[in-house]
Length: 222
Image 1 (tube, one colour):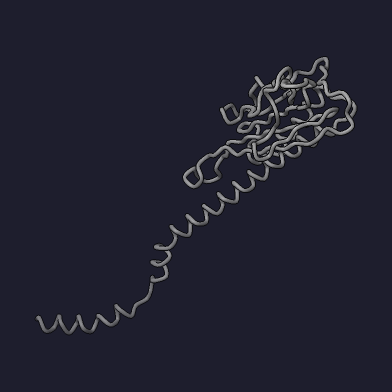
Image 2 (spheres, rainbow, N blue to C red):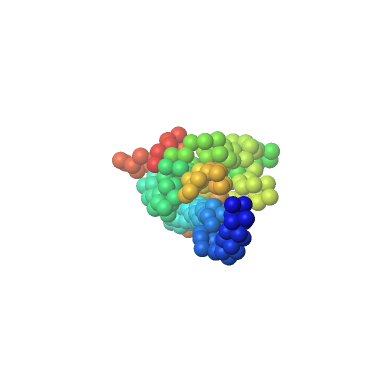
């Protein structure tokens, strides 16, 4: 009996070792989780890159559009410009998860130790309400009567308005909404700044318009 089992075992063993059926399926089962993870990570990275591009586009477009308004500017002009971030950011749900701050900056007209920059007016849109989405360089009227505002922008990228003109400084923040999962890159706050010099506008006052509600920075809504 023992010898019979041994002969059968010896006869069957080469066939089993040579049988490669199902090998590809086993290999795929082992590799599939890594390939799937890599593919999802690539999709998430692409989505984040698009989101960063959109945030930069929103900042640049809004600043340029406000700076282009000639002769004078009013609340209706600003509200119209503030529609563009919502349109540009539709595919990333910017209105609900982003914030745009528009600041019109010019010299404060003071002399001596009180000379500096002045945020004449400031308007906002977007529902994002976090510490990161607040104006980073001050609120409306900062620097009007003192030297508390010397420039806009980061210390490495300072910018100031010259006498007789104004800067339109835009701050855009967006809480990234993952395409796949927060496990890859989390949900960071993306930020962009842009600035354009006002062209062909002599009056920098933001005029009121009957029936038009100003986009005040105390309001957070999509």
